[in-house]
Image (cartoon, rainbow, N blue to C red; front, top):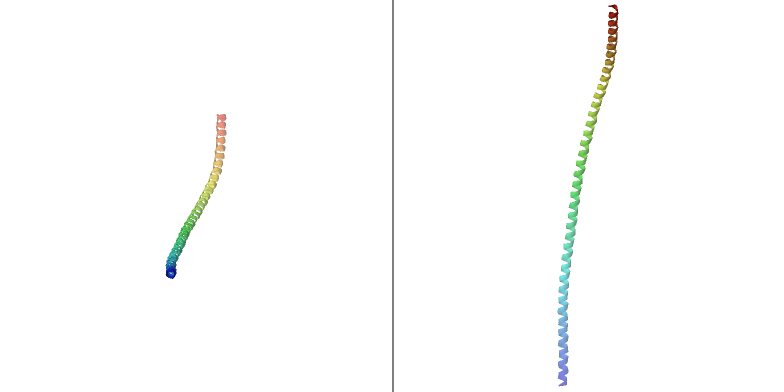
Length: 142
């Protein structure tokens, strides 16, 4: 009876060890599957992250290209505006030079006219004085 009990106990221990080994194997298999899923998920996340980084780099590159295009357009517009301003300034200086020449010519003419006017005024005054003398002489002779 005792031997049967020992045999049953030994059999139960073997069965328990077999169950423990089977359970350990199932847990190990389950952990391996979970590990594979986690690794696959990490890999997918890493790929997605890399894709997002590439997209971000592409967006930055596109943004830099757009900024360069805008800067270039602004520089061209500024250069064109400066060219127009320089031309307008040159045209204004030429026109001012022409007008200054005309003013100088008019000043010379005015000087000549004033000189002639002084001469004529002097002659008139002399003629008036002569006429006055003649009037007085005529009065005296009468």
